[in-house]
Length: 615
Image 1 (tube, rainbow, N blue to C red):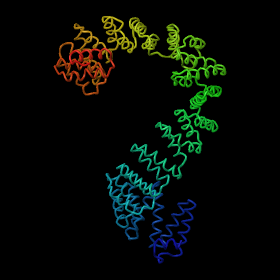
Image 2 (image 1 turned 45 degrees about the vertical axis):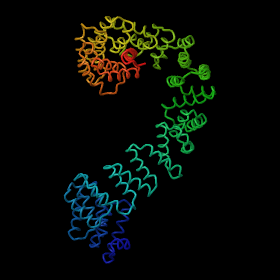
Image 3 (image 1 turned 60 degrees about the horizontal axis):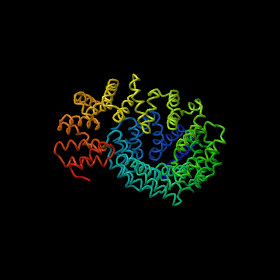
Image 4 (image 1 turned 180 degrees about the vertical axis):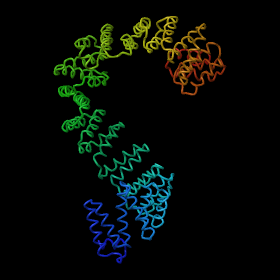
């Protein structure tokens, strides 16, 4: 203790036997975490050696720690510190402690005074950084030159430099990144790497993050398992499956379910059966997979064996999967374009039917499979084996109804199943019409039309779907009449208002032009940025012969990228009427290039050929 005190103080005269004894007991008390006793001994040491600065520093340091949790100790620090200062028995450390406690005591004026004195007495990384943080709290913005001065000191303490880098990053992330780079270059350990990676992440430099970790791994430097797992996880989530496979040895070495799961599914994506099976077996051995992940894992493990025609093993894992929706999605992943692929699934799921105790489970999957193959009779055999309880329990009523429509157009069966579902927003007829709209649009139209006529409150989408099909299958009078019912039911729906307004314009119903204008303006009040509604209003004005109003209404569509052939065609016609032929030609050609509305493409082509001699 004598040596310690005299080395710090550089003045043997201030050391006496009593102060040494008290200081020794204080250190023992601190080792035993007896702070109160340490304070008493240090106070006695201070009394015994009144000129010893080092003892005063230790006393204030411990009192200062207590002051963070107990306001009484703040008063002690301030009283002692001010006394030492008045007697000129102080050091940079004493001044810094006093400044910090004044700041804690919400006395910024005094704190500022002692921070400045501490820095003037002996600038250091600690007091420069502490003064900067103080300024941030009480006198923002803080003086950034304080941090720059702190960086001029020898780089000896990693933690302090990381703290400075963090403070600079809060102001200028890129400047902070450069400091993190230098700190990492000096210490080259995982702690400094982690701080550097955090800065890169804030800047969105995902690629550089992965490069830094991978470089460290390639150089056989220490990398913790969590960081390795982070690397592989990032490769996986950014779909760099090849990188995951390249690090397969690392994954097997870490040997946790999390990292092996990334390896397993990367192998699935790349059809790497060998690595996939090896990783899958390791995951099984560890056996700590969350229950909600198991069905997906087992289904894809089975898929690996199915793809190499080991049906027995595939079925074993499909049975373990025990989740009808997961296996259904697996079947839907296959294109079924080749006989080899069809036979592979057929053999596996027929064997699955034989081996599983849950026959309805297998019937449903085979129903899906044969529906996709358009083998309707086989599909219906399996679908007819399904009980209502099974379909309800597994929430399969809607998709099974769709399969009945696809395989036999059995409207009654589909309706029975849909009425058992919990969907209340749509009627069963509305759902059926939606299912048929692509494959059998004429039947879909009939159902939609009857629904509008017979249902007092059809769903809003029923009117929209009907309007798409009615121009093909119904008279314009019926169409307008039924859409008017929609407007009455949904007077504040912009889509229905727009649909009816545009129908009137498109079909030259001159007696209803004023009504159409009212509808479209109301639709724009509801959805003022909708370019399709503005296009409808412009087309109405065009049909009314008010071409200037028409081009004015096209202002919003023209501010956006035009991606609809109908809008492009309308612009072509409007510009022709305004005798702006170059612009007209431009938009007519655009309508053809976009090619997403047949009638507009046909009319645009006709004008290009007749007026512009385009081939």
